[in-house]
Image (tube, rainbow, N blue to C red):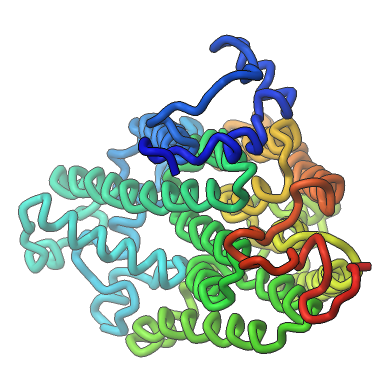
Length: 486
C-alpha cells in the first residue's frame, strides 16, 4: 500500500474501468469528461469503496425523500399512498403490529392478540422493528403506553403523537436498513480485486432508490452480499453464517445452500460443505429461538407472507386472472416445490459440469424462485440484486431487468389504489401486462446470467485471499484432484 492508503500502481492498472468496458457507463461518463484515460491515476482519498458508499447513501436519501408524503400514515387503510407510489410497510406496521403500544411481536398474550393479529414479518425483520420501537420510545419521550392500551385501536391510529412516533419509527428503521445496505455495498467492492466498481451497480440501482424503505428485505440483501464476500474469500463458516442469517429474513436466501454445497462437493471438499451447512442451520435456529420460545403460533404466522396464496406480481395471480383458474394453496405449494426441485437439480448439474460461479448459480436459482413462487412482492427483488450485480457485469442487462421491476411496482401502486379499475367494472387488464413484464424481466436476467457465466472475470474465488497461493478452484484445476475442470 502507498502512504495514502492506495493500492500499488500495478493493482490500479489491473483494475477493470467500467467507463471503458461498459457502453452504458461510457455514455454516462461523457457528462464528467469521458472514459478513464490511459494515464489516469487513482485519487488518494476517493477510493472505489468510498465512492460506492457515497452513491448508496445518495440513492437511499432519494428513496426516503420519495416516501416522505406517506410518513404520516401509521396504520390507516386508505389507498392514497398506493397511487402516490410512496407506501411503506415499515410505517403502517407501527400500529398494525402493535409496536405503538410496545408489544413484543411474538407474544401469546390473549389481550394483545385480541387487539393485534400476529404480523406477517419474518423473525429477523421483526426483531429489528422491535428495536426500532424501543429507540422510537426513547426519542419521542417515552409515551404512556398503558393509557394508550385502554383506547380502541381505531383511535390509536389517529392520535397526533402516534403519527409523530410512526414517522420516527420509519426513520429509525430506515437508518438501520441503510446501515445494512452500506454493508452490502462495501462487501460487494471486495468480491474481486480487479472489479471493485461492479458494486456501483448495486449502490446506484434504481430499485434501491424506489424500494427503500418499503420493507425490511435489505437485511436479506446484506446477508446475501456477506455470503458472496465470504465465498470469494474461501470462508465456508462465514458463508454458512451469512446464509443462515439471511434465511431468517427471507426464505429465498436459504436456496443459496444448494449451489454452495454443490460446488464444495464438486471440488471434493466435504468437510467445508459440512461446516457451511451446520453453521447455516445453527445460525438460523439461534435467530428463530426467541420467536419460537415466545409463541409458536406467531412464529408460524410470521412466514405466512410467503405461503398465503397467489400474491401480487406472481405468475400464479397472472394465470388466475387471465384464465380464471384459482388453484388452492396446496396446489401452488406442490407445483412451486416441484419446479424449484427441477431448477435445483439443474443448478447441481451446472455446478458439476460447467464453470458457473456461485453468484451465477445463485442468481439462476433465486430468479427462478421469484418466477415460480406465489409470493412476489416488489421488494423481494432486493434479495436478488447483490447476486445479479456479481453475476451479470453489464449495466444494460441489469437496467432492463430493473426497469421491468419498476414498471410493475408503479402499476401495482395504481392497481392497489384502484386507479386501474375500468369505470364500468371488470378486470384491471393493464396490471396483467405489468405482471408479465416483471416475469419477462426475470427471464431476461436468467438469460443474461447464462451469457456471462463462465466468461472472463467470472471466477468467484479471490486467488489472493481464498487460494492462498493454491490454484484457483474455479479457473485452474480441481483442488486436491490435479486435473482440469470439465
